[in-house]
Amino acid sequence: HHDTHTFVVHANTHHTRVQAFVHTSEMNLFRLAGDMSHLASILVLLLKIQATKSCAGVSLKTQELYAIVFLTRYLDLFTNFVSLYNTIMKLIFIGSALAIIWLMRRHKVVRQSYDKSQDTFRYEFLLAPCFLLSLVLNNMFTVMEVLWTFSIYLEAVAILPQMVLLQRTRNVDNLTGNYVFLLGAYRALYILNWIYRYYTEPGYRQWLVWLSGIVQTAVYCDFFYYYIQSWKNNEKLQLPA
Image: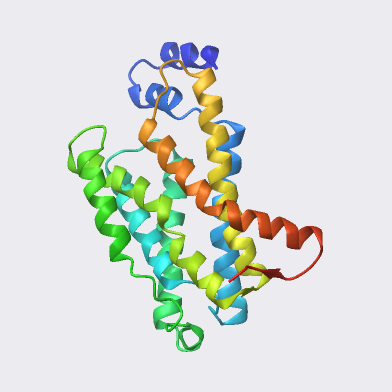
């Protein structure tokens, strides 16, 4: 990729943006696969809700946390253009998160299937510590950086209300199972992406992101185990209470 870099610099010295893109967000297979897995997880969920007109087994709390994650992470949407791919992905993630919340809260049929009595995780207990942590541990003390860091920490734990709901309802339908699995796969692929970048990009270090990613993947380990077991034995996915 060094050749492309020199080419870009020679071809257009004015476009520092392009250089920055080549420098900072080297697109590799792991990252692309991670993004696609992330995208697939959200589409699976949207399709499930649209097709069945039901959101049974889906945690609204988790969806709201994800909306907060995307909104705080992608604040630079209007100020910082990296690439068309980047912008489209950001818009899809924000739009789909808000669409899912709208369906679960407002859609007259879908919202009746929302199990409020089971989805009781108090997410203030996640929001407050993540925010405090981002004030203390960040790369730079600016509003954008603190909010970006906050989104990284929050994403690591945003799935917890969904996990709690799945364990309470025990029986997980295929689509919800696939949704959680794809979300976990996205995280695992991103870890491979970091390892790859660590070895191919000189000076690439992102401790805060790495640590959060590892915590997040650990949250899924248990689920992965049961998901793969059920897939192997061709049984319905059941989580132990």
